Amino acid sequence: MAANEIPASDNAAAPLVACSLTAGDLAAQARRWVRLAARAMTGRAETAHGLRISFHPEPGAEEELRALAAAENECCPWAAWTVEASAGRLVLDVRSAGGGVTALHDMLTGLAPAPASRSHADP
Image 1: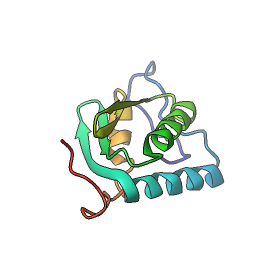
Image 2: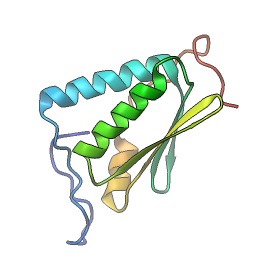
Image 3: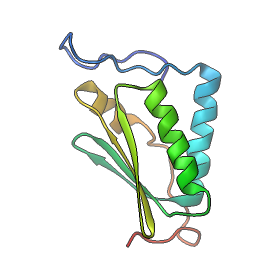
Image 4: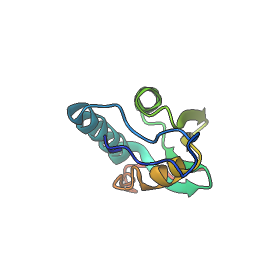
C-alpha cells in the first residue's frame, strides 16, 4: 500500500483508494506481512474483486492474519479484508470495486510463499 492517493475511478462517487498509515507504520505493517508469508503463506490469487491469499494454520498464524486484516480494514476502508479458517487452511479474501481492485492486484505482490519444506499444501 502507498500513502499516496490513487483515484478509484472516474466516478466521483467511488471511494478514494488511499492508506492512512504513516510511513513508519506502513513499513512495520509490511514487515509483519512478509514474516507471516515466509512462515505460512501457501498461495496468492488475483480475483475479479481483489485478492485471495491462502495460509497454512501454523501456530499463531490465524491470530496474526486476523490482526493484520483488522489493521488493513482500519487504514484502507476502501477494501474489505476477511479471514476464513477451516481445517488445515486459512484464507484471506480482500475485496473492493473500481480502482480498488486494481490497487489490490498491485498489493502484496512481493510476498513469497513459505518454502515447500516449511509449508503444507492446501487440501
